[in-house]
Amino acid sequence: MQTPVVTVIVPGYDVGLYAAEALESLRAQTLTDWVAVLVDDASTDHTGTLFDAAAAADERFRVVHHRERGGLSAARNTGLDLVRTPLLGFLDADDRYTPHALERLVGTVTASGSDLALGAYVRLRPDADGGYTAGSVQPWVTAATHPERTGTTLDAHPDASGNIVAWSKVSRTELWQRTGLRFPVGKAYEDQVVAQQLYTRARAFDVIPDVVVEWRERADGSSITQHKDELPVLRDYLEALAGGIAVLDAAGQTRAAASRVRLILAMDLPPLVELARDHPDPAYRRELGTFARTLWARAERVGLAEPAATAVAAAQLW
Image 1 (tube, rainbow, N blue to C red):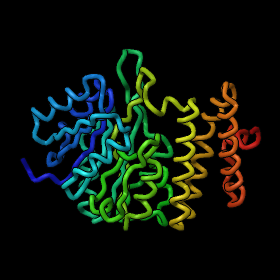
Image 2 (cartoon, one colour):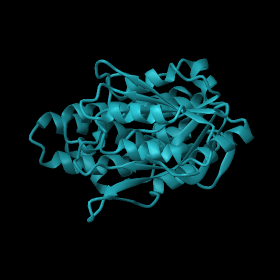
Image 3 (tube, one colour):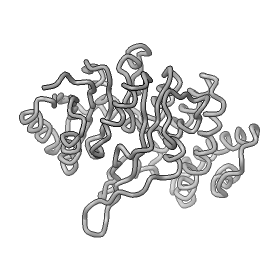
Image 4 (cartoon, rainbow, N blue to C red):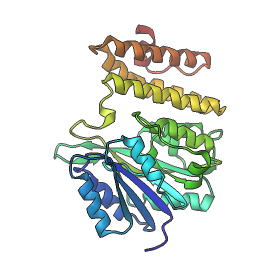
């Protein structure tokens, strides 16, 4: 086996229906000098068996089995503790890489010397034939990753802060070691704060417009992003949104913070408002309203352009 340059951390819990595709997308990479840490987070289905079979067939895979479920953050942290390569990345076990993903992400940071690289991504949505079809790159993803840049920073490219997922990136292992960065355990949307910490702590980062990941929206509705109507999930979501902005504020990244506020008002709040209108729990509306009023007040103070009408309604109604 070639000396590996990048470790891909692949956490999975009860993703037996999808994990084979994720693992195959790794094996299909045009860059072949990778290793992967597969973390089975105490799955109750055959996820662990799939991981073990992959490791038996390909020495680039290593498997760790959690005895008790710790959640996505804990699984990612387990993988982080086992990284021995200069670079690292993440791939959730229900998603899949595009064939040139690692070649492009690893290639740009190797050439530029940057600490971090991020690429574009699209959703995999259920189709009428019982499969999944990849969508198009959404505008906020394009704003973060187009045009291609090397050696940039949030000062020069504040809209990069809109790319808040862990699995669209490759970063230097030294960045994680130097800063002691880890994912917050027990929280949903755990990568939002971590993404902003990566941007603010990186000496420089690269962006590429290439689609590197196809992100699955599960047909059975079991993805965490499909449970925003649940109050505990909403609380984690709002905490993550606010926490990411707080990281940018603490780093003095006012333009990036403003970019995040604008995007949250336009993209995150409107669907939450629709959920809240008929929600049976008044606490859902109260907590969303408190968050929306705080965010809208901040937007007014810094003179941001008027966001979507439903976002304004959230600030005014509750």
